[in-house]
Image 1 (tube, each protein chain N blue to C red):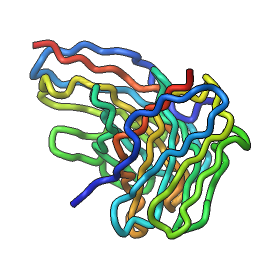
Image 2 (cartoon, rainbow over the protein chains, first blue to last red):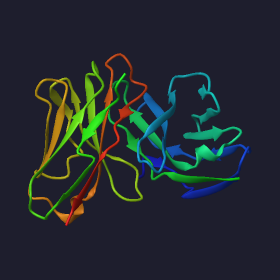
Image 3 (tube, rainbow over the protein chains, first blue to last red):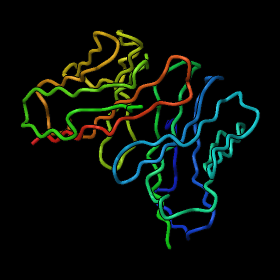
Length: 115
Length: 114
C-alpha cells in the first residue's frame, strides 16, 4: 500500500483564491510527522510546514496551514490568498518514528496559479 | 548561512562508468540523507547517515550504489557500472540533531547516463 497518496496530479487556481492540496497517509506507527515541500521549476525542495502526530493543533506558517485529520489519516495543505509565485510542484511527505528517520514522499501535485 | 550544497550540478556519463556525487551539509548538522528523484516522481529515499555511520541504507537499490561520510560532514554517493535507469536527480538533505521537524535540501545533481 502507498504510504503517501496525493490524488491531484494537477490543479489550476485563480490568483488570490485559497487552494487545498490533498494528502492521505498510511502508517501503524503512533509517532510520525507530516511535511509539505514546494518544488519550483528550479528544482530545489523548499520546506513549508510540519505537523507532528501528537500535536493538538493544526500547524500554520504564514499563508500555509495544514488541515490535520488524524482519524481520517489526512494532512491537507491549505494555501490562502494564492500568488503567482505559488505555482510549483507540492509534495506531501511522512516520517515514521520519533527521530531523524527518512521521509517518504507522495507523487506530488502540480499547482498552477492563473492571473 | 550557507545551505546544503551539491556538486556537480550536472553529470553526464556513459553506461558502465563510475560516478561520484558530493554533498556538503549545513555546518553542524549531524543527519544527512540521500534521495533520488526520477522525472515526474517524488524523491525516493536512498540512505541516511547519523554522524559517520549509515543508520539506514535500506533504500539503496543494489550493490552498485554506495555512500560514505568519513568525517561526519561531507558525504559522497558512489555509483559503479552506471546504467541508463540510474538517470535521475540525486538530492541531498541534512538535519540538525535537535530537530526532527525539517530536512534542508540541496539543489541536487542531475545525472544522465547515456
